[in-house]
Image (cartoon, rainbow over all chains, first blue to last red; front, side, top):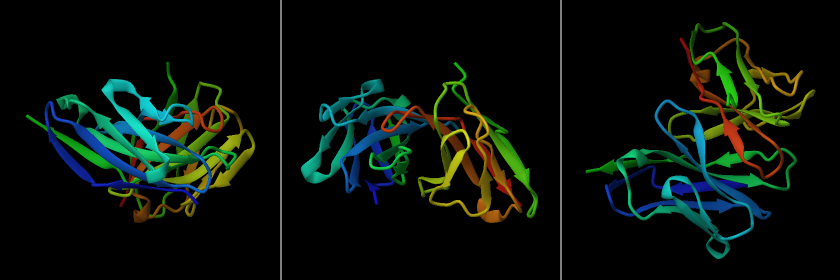
Amino acid sequence: AQSVTQLGSHVSVSEGALVLLRCNYSSSVPPYLFWYVQYPNQGLQLLLKYTSAATLVKGINGFEAEFKKSETSFHLTKPSAHMSDAAEYFCAVSDLAGTASKLTFGTGTRLQVTL
Amino acid sequence: NAGVTQTPKFRILKIGQSMTLQCTQDMNHNYMYWYRQDPGMGLKLIYYSVGAGITDKGEVPNGYNVSRSTTEDFPLRLELAAPSQTSVYFCASGLSTGNTIYFGEGSWLTVV
């Protein structure tokens, strides 16, 4: 069975500061990993995904994530936070051994950006 | 681009009532999913489908039913609504294993 753990349900950073959202996964097979962002009262939008190619993945809005197999981690970073980054972020893992590409989500991290 | 479209966006149900959440996608995706999102709990998979005529249970299927008569549509039916089904429901679709899954904008359901 696969699972995802997101450390920190709330993260607050100042505008211009580094954003670091943590995600650790558990999977019995090589995983595909995803970060989604959810703005208030909206659906989920894909930020980036890891699909066993390059371990450093660049996504939209200046976000990137690094797959570290030894640490079973897929942390999301952005060098400089912007007010518009305030949202909820979900890490998810897809079990490629299954036939339906089902996503298992973490519980989410709410990012607050302050002036 | 319509993508994944869900209706209704908001609904209040009384305990014991039934309703259907509609979901349609125009991307010719084989895979479709229904998730529910509860505060602090992330998203939980209710049902999924790998193609027309094929559906299967996810993590939290009790109290729900689905059908997949066409590639485009994947309605979710709630029978005998209960307060525990108060949640935000998301429909999603994807092309194949490992590919991006696209989400609808959600349906807010309250059972009173």
